[in-house]
Image 1 (tube, helix red, strand yellow):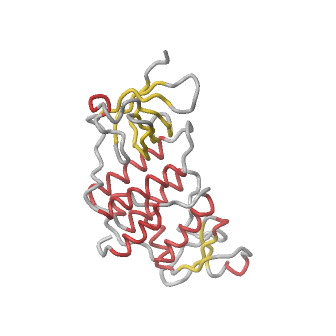
Image 2: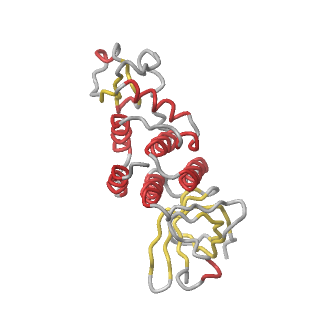
Length: 257
């Protein structure tokens, strides 16, 4: 029998399977993204402690199966070093948290190293728990997760001449270059570009460098910045995220978010 392995893990999604089992997708600290099946999860409170729901943060124990992609989850437990995420007490928290889970799921692959992704997601969900949901936190999370995935977007300098942006001068975001070009360089860049206000560019440069807790207490970049990130995400993802429309509607209707 394969040895039991263990790792801290965040549940990204879960669904019932048969009368008592549960199939779960998790982002683990030590083994990347894993898909697993938990036999009897709907009936056994002792082994799983209700830790196999989205947003659960638990110590996962599992065995690898000789055949098949799903690991066999033996138990999931709370651990003193793993903070729980308090997401379900507010609609905006649920909306932003669900988007974060789906984005993390879409940008990770099973079996690949993803400790950095786990840490960004863990910090982001912890920040939502403490400070609530905000557009600035969303933008900062998107930038940090893209950086982890190797798509570091550049808003702190022009991709052509390396000049820093100014709040008083517009810049242009070029999806294919993953960053901005300044107004002076724009005529020499043949690709299509999205015009952005200078204040939005400066705000994104700041949010990309700030830690998530700091970002959550600052103002977001404008709608043009949100559109730039959205267009870039669409260029690298293989599917449209279902949680985006819900998040956008909640954020638009929540004056605090």
